[in-house]
Amino acid sequence: MGRDLDKERFTEEEYVRFGERMEEQLAVLRELLDTPGFGQGPATIGAELELFLIDGDGRPLPRNSQVQESLDDPRVVLELGRYNIEVNLTPTPLAGTPFEVLAAEVQEMMTKVDEAVEHGGAVPIGILPTLDTEDFTLGAMSDQNRYRAMSRGIRRLRLEPFLVKIDDLELSVEDVILESANTSWQVHIRTPPERFARLFNAAQLAIGPVLAVCGNSPFFVGRQLWEETRIALMEEAADDRDVQRGERRDGRVTFGSDWVREGAYELFERYVRDYDPILPDLTDDAGRYDVPELRLHQGTVWQWNRPVYDPADGGHLRIEMRALPAGPSCADMAANTAFLLGLTLSQAERDLTGYRFAQAYQNFYRAAMSGLDAKLSWPGDEGEFEAADLVLRLLPEAREGLLAAGVKPHDADRALGVIEQRTRLRRTGSVWQREALERFGGDRRRMVRRYRELALSGLPVHLWP
Image 1: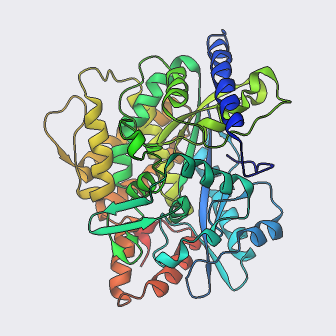
Image 2: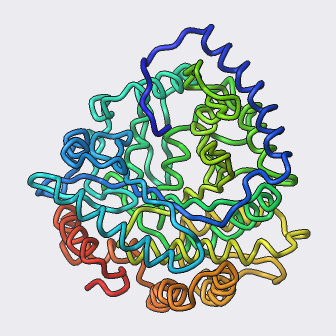
């Protein structure tokens, strides 16, 4: 989904041919994954940061193409909304000091983007509190064929309006533009095929307690909703299931419905089997192992953890972890990454037999709703725990996972120390936003301006005044 398309309209014949190519390329991918030595190499991590652009008053600023042009940096790409922009961070080895490296580049890029916004700035936040319903028009969509084509592709499948229901909020819109309300911090880790199932299942298990301590999206269109409202909003704002597809278990944005039994192939196969194409862009000059149609289609199924096949450098697999919100600061995002990766690596050695997938599923949504107050379960333990207590108990396991992967102790300890302090003080981004909004008498714009200042300072949120 990173590249633009040559056109925005496609014929039914192109949809049919695209489907045929996906089937052909599934066979190619299976052959690749079964090839001895495929995808081997040192573990690397990468990340993508989505930002909001704001004007001097703290309102969304629809100027992403101008900001991208002025920066002229290949790491900066356009996102769905004109007030969104994405920064692709440089992949780095997991061994060494990856979180120090990641935090430095995040700080550099946030500052660069912020300075490129005339009479405004850039904000790393899950949902911008100053968004209102009038910000979600077709005119708010970025001027790129791929986004117009994606909108047409989903509307081809879903004739009904998109209905968002979160607590006492009900909102009906005619287009996928509501997706632009959400900005994420998406983390990638390279994994060899034979380890994929264990690592993927471990990521599904880990994300519940991790998300509980990372909430940064408590507001949407003037309402106080979940600790991480982004989770519910994304799932409903791009759900292509209408009355004709009501039998499909999972939406286009989903946690999933079962553990992975064999490996990455079963997920790619399910994406082809269960989800209609929405961007049937045909590529005629690709190499055999590029599988461009399969990769493009996979990029339009937004599972919270999902597989990525990259043909670069002989080809490899990654797990993309999409559930973390943007922000609050570079230190927080590095810490969130360390906790998520460390817990995933440590839990990959665990036998999940006997722990039902439904429990991991329940943990994820409870964490999104209630944050550190959520009641979560954990394999090998009876009953439920308050999320804050479970997080503190799991931090040593996350540290062990990082050190076993070659992360330097001081880098792991600095990052995980942020999580520990945030948990003990119960100071997540969502908590800060709620308290700041109350202090500012409900003035959302003033709160956003203060948030931007503190986010750019680099201080972790538990130290924000």
